[in-house]
Length: 427
Image (cartoon, rainbow, N blue to C red; front, side):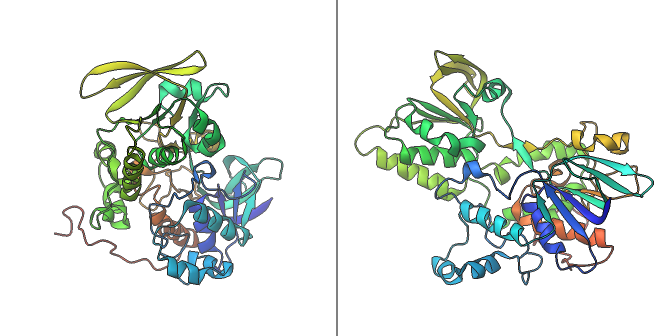
C-alpha cells in the first residue's frame, strides 16, 4: 500500500486550501481524494449576479501566504484578467468566478485525486498509520488524515419526504438551477428560508418570472434580517474569537451558537436592497402580487392535486394556516456531513460528546484513542463557533493543521488577529 504523510478526504474549498498550502512543502507527501469528477462549488446556486459574502482575499491561500501561486490574483493573471478585475473594483466575487477559480487551482495540484471515493478509515496497528479504503482502488496508508467532507442540504422534517420524491415539486435550493425553468413557469412558488440562498432564489424569481402572483417567501426568523457586516462585528470570524469560543463550556457554546444566526444566516444588504428595488419596480403598474412573511414556520406538508399543501404557524401571533402552492424551494441551509459511516472502522476510538458530535481540540484535531492525528475542516462549528464554515478562516485553519502535521512552523501565524478582547483573561 502507498504510504503518505497526509491524506485529505473531500476536496471542497477547505481541503483544497490545505492542498495548495502544502504543495511547496519539501518532503511532504500529501494526497487528497474526492468522489466527484471535478471541483464544483454549490453548482445549483450559481445564480447570475450572486456573489460571495466574503472579500476576494478570502481565497485558498492569501490570508496565510499572499505570495502563493494559488492565490486568486494568480488565477486572474493566468487568465489574463488582472486589469479588468482592477478596473471593475470588485471586492466580492461572483459565485461562478469562485467556482472557476477552485477548478483552476485543483487542476494545478497533482495531490488532488478526483473520482476516488474514500469509503472508510481505520487504524492499522502493523503499519502505525491510518488505512483508507478507496472504492475501486487499493487502500492507502497515511500518517495523518484530514476530513473535509463538506456539508449536505438540510431540509425541515415536514418537507423531507417530499424532497426525496422526484415526482413532487419540492426541492432544496441546492438544486435550484436544475429546476429553474419549471419554477419560472409554475403557477405558484413558495420559498422557505430567510438566509442568503433563499434571498438569491427570491431575487432571481422576482427578476425572471412573468408574474409575481403566487410567489411567496416564508421565513422562520422574526425578520428578513441583514447579515452582521460591521467591522467589529466581523471580528467574530477571527482566530481570536474562535479560540475564545472553543474555551467556553460546551453548554454555553450550545446556547450561544443559535443566537448568532445573523453572523452566518442573515442576508447581505445589497441583496436585500435589490429585492426591495425589484418589488418597487414591479409595483409601478399595480400591486406586485408577491407575499413576504417572516416569523412563519412550516409544521406540515403534503401533496394535493399535483401541488403541495403547507401547514404553517406564526410564532408571534400564535396562529396557524394552510397554504396551497404549486412548488416549494427549501432554502433551509446545510448541515455537516455525518462522519459516522466514514469513521465506523475506528469504532469507539473516536471520542464524541453527549450529543454524539466529534470532540475537537483547539487545533482542529479529533480526540482519538489511536496515536495518529485526525483533523477536521468545517465539521467543528459546535466546538469552534460560527467561523467554521466561513471561507475567510479556511486558509488559517489549513495552516494550523499543516504546521501540526509537519511538526514545525511551515507558516507563521500572528498571535493577535482582532482588536476586540474576548473574555477577561487579558484585562
